[in-house]
Length: 399
View 1 (cartoon, rainbow, N blue to C red):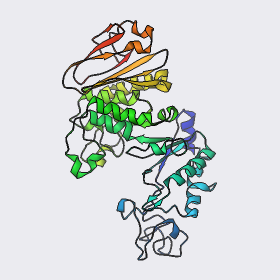
View 2: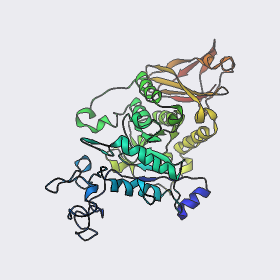
View 3: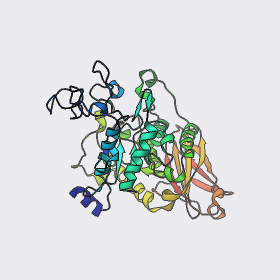
């Protein structure tokens, strides 16, 4: 309560992370091994316990576990009592922490894509609207963020989640565009070594297909990310150049949605790419963080993202997606920003149709530098901005 109060004084909001899909075996409700509580308590050793209906048990006391991980028994939402204690009652889990004295600002739900989905018992589109209703009753502005790695637009119609962790529409395609194996399909041994270089057209189509299925308001809420606690950090991959990293970060901040900075990315935190633990190193507080190139880039883009109207409520339009160069605009009637990102091994000249934004933009002087200070080799010709894009380079251009 003290922490939340102090955060709010400083203009910072806080959301909590929880799994309501499963518990652990040591949880008091389940209590398989009597680790913390007498074995007579809990569902596993006592068929008469009130929590027995919270889980899926077989006749031989076998139980359903999330992804068959035996330490993570799955919760059974056919139980009304479970629904009450998780989200319906006034003192339920999701309501309690939104209320005073805690006054948190939302929830991030772990493995939300599998929650209440169990073989023939598919309750997800019943449970999620009820959870949303309970949360919004306590705080209409509370943010509902759900973990999902794939296309989950069915949950983003305004009556379930506010946002997914946008692996599908930002993290996965952007990282693949810069040469990585797709981080989702790469989990499968058979697909891990399939080599495919994503083109700009591939990137454009995956992003626009996702965005086109969302309302404008929901699109602006999407939790865009490059890295997370489940993904090796992009900057720790030695095959990713500094130019590629700069392009990826620029896209993170300029695509429609919210920009999520995973702690330490701005500090060029150390790590490995061989295991999940490699992206969870401690924050390098003894480092001169503010002197790093990443800190300067993240700071500049954060300021642009939060102060320029085009990135808060502006439109989105793809302007170029040929070969391995991708360019798009964020715009209002008063301002136009163009993001240009190359994953090409050769220099390319691209054409930005400035005239489509109005006569005034087509007649503006050619910028000598982009807004991040990079030199531009460009010219305006008949309302079209011609830009020379060296191999691997990226720009953020204000028309």
